[in-house]
Length: 277
Ligand SMILES: O=C(O)CCC(=O)C(=O)O
Image 1 (tube, rainbow, N blue to C red):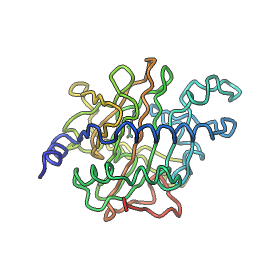
Image 2 (image 1 turned 60 degrees about the vertical axis):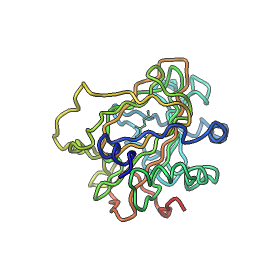
Image 3 (image 1 turned 45 degrees about the vertical axis):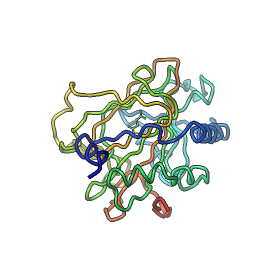
């Protein structure tokens, strides 16, 4: 095994400093600005919160697996649903199929740095399942509570790996990722699924112990650094209370050979699942 593969197997994450250079980062940042420019705030009212998963009751969220949809931060809308801040400062995230629907993101996600990272952490035949732009705007950027990606993107056997790319320098002050090294070897605590009766979603609790308070480490990352996260590695991020933006892009891949049950919340409809080529 290479050092990267060994470290990934041991810790549950791998860091690829400078995976993308400044020019590539600026190109994708400009594509993101374009997506927000084209976004009509009057068309959306869904807030994305990881503490109570309130968005999960919303059809706009549940039908976003094969679309490009926009989700607000908590507190940016008034009681009448009007934006209280500039739309460029209002979003929590955009998801979940930019990599299949927007040519620039298709090319970006299928470029060598993502494919090479997937190979380096041992993926055999990676398929590109989900993409997200995570804003963490200054002052309004919300917390992402501790979770594993397998909880939300379930395959049998577990195969999801998240590729998280810093598009700004991510620090402890502006809400970088935190992870619990080695804890990908623990049993997963929960599974988020479509409800058995077809109405909405549910979080199935497997009754495992809470994550420990100690042992979490910050994964500070300069813009252009990519971090691969094993699907069962607990990770989280804090609110951005600083004046510095912490923009990031994530791509989640699964193995072609793994089963992706229809009970997953993310429904790609008729979009074919494609790999890096
Ligand atoms: O960007 C963040 O703060 C969290 C991202 C994350 O948890 C994920 O993509 O699974």
